[in-house]
Each structure stands twice: as structure tokens, then as C-alpha cells.
Image (cartoon, rainbow, N blue to C red; front, side):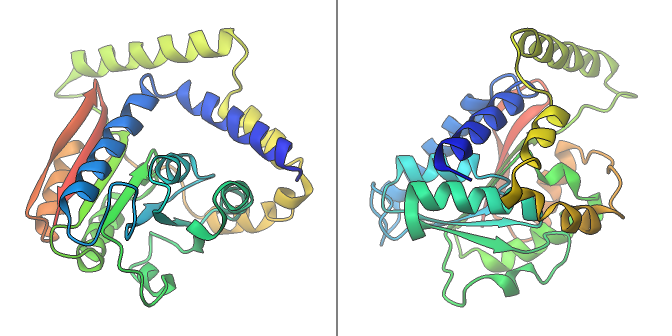
Length: 263
């Protein structure tokens, strides 16, 4: 794809994602602020990201990776994803924007051997994820955190931004309020012409460089139906069980949450 086309597709991705996440940029901002603090307070790192390596788990087309690379111009990001369409798009876009500071990694986070796909000298101090890990079954999520605990160093940081739904049985009012907020955000966005998830994907796979990966994408996800949402408590308890010294919420808008864990 021509660079302008890549940027247009990425811009529309960000718009359609924001239609499902009321304060998406606030989520990114709080995560970047934490990264900045780690750079300021960790030996061997600098405020411009010198020495910093970040793992972006299920990076998609690279929205969060791009924001990290923009704010920290000496940092490096390893973007891990199992979706060959989105990973190809991330590689083309971020490669044109940031060169070899972004490295795409084709790996399945549902498998515990995903670290074997990382470079031998990874040395990542921070791992992040945004609007992605809800695709994992609860048991896979627990296993991912256990594996991540062995990848990050002592005092390494993990942040996950995602919808962690209220329990509709024990929290019916909270569930209804959050659902209303989601509907308002989506209605306002779609009324001004923002694409839906399905409309964006229809446009994306019309491009030859992405369409060639469509069949492989369908094969990889054919046996992965939608998964039950893992509640916030499961995330926090799984991180602690995986050896993280502390775990808590650093940002929240109804059931949209940013969780932080420190090794």
C-alpha cells in the first residue's frame, strides 16, 4: 500500500476504536505517563526512551506502539500479534514512521511458548496491551500473566487497558450504566460517519498486501469463539499469583479500566 493509504486506514482504525471506547486517548495518556516515570526513575534509561524496550501484547495495527515511539524517540517496541492482517499493517505503517525501532513479532499469546519468538536479548522492562486480552479465555489469561512474570525483570511494569465488564447478575445497575455509556459513544460516532468494526475490516482486506493474509487469519481464528469476559478481580489476582509485587487500577471509566502490575 502507498503510505497515504496506510495512514488513512490507520486513521479510520483509530476512529472506529474510539467509537467503542469513550475516553480512548485518556487511557493511552495515563499509560504513557507511567512509562515516562519509569524512564525517569530507572537506572540505564533516559527521559527520551534511551535503553527502553517495550512489549506491546496483541499490538494490532500499532496504535499504542506508535504513541510510545512518538513520545519516547529513542525507545524500541516489539509488537506481538497473531493476526497476520493487523501485524502486516503495523509493520508497514510503523516501519515507515519509525524504522527499525518497531519490530513485529508473529506469536500466539494463547500459547505459553510465545516468548520463544522474541529476540534472545529482548531485555524488555515494560509490557503493555490495549483492547485485546479480552479475546483470551480466563485460563489462557492466567497462563499469559504467569509467563509474563518470567519475562519481565524485577520492578518491570505491565499495563493492560481494556473493558473489564461488571457482573450483570451481582452488579445490574453498574452494568446498565456502562452499557448506556457505550451506546451513547457509538451512536454519536456512527452518526457522524465513523466506520463500524465490520466496515473497517471490509475496507482493510480490499488492499492486496492485506488481503493475501485473510485466509491465514481465518484459519488461525476459526476455532476461537468469543470468550467470556474475565472480571477485574481475576486480572488482579492472576497478576499477584504470577509473582507481581503489586497490582491495581490506575485509570477507570465505568467498566473501561487500565490495570497496572509491578514485578
